[in-house]
Amino acid sequence: MFPRQKRYHLTKEERIGIILLAGRDTTRHVTSTINAKHRTHIHPDTVAKHIKFNRTGSIIDASGSGRLKTATDESTSAQVLAVMARSPTNGTRHLSAQMGISQSSVMRILRLPSGTHTSCRCCSI
Image (cartoon, rainbow, N blue to C red):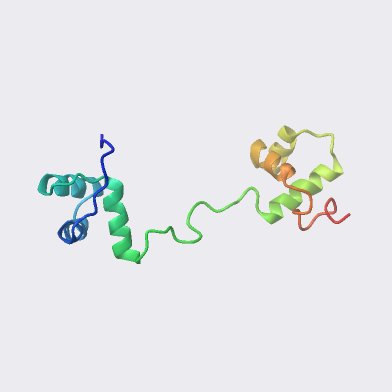
């Protein structure tokens, strides 16, 4: 929808227009308004970054943003490893059903490098 074009630095007037319009419109509407009014065509990501910079002072994502680890946290990892140590012949599918987590999470936990499982016997040897 938005072809890649040569990059232009936005003028002060364009940046101010983005911030003023951002308070009452969507990012896409701000983009189309700015593109209709000024010589440069900007992408909605540019508008979003300017809004974020105005709000936070930076365009970097906040630390801790994103989904939290639930299936591969330390306590779950320790439980999975303990169950696997008790009955190593059971497969990952059986273990995932028993633990209530996905098979891929079980595989991820079992694939961790040796020495990273902090509260289990397998790494304290």
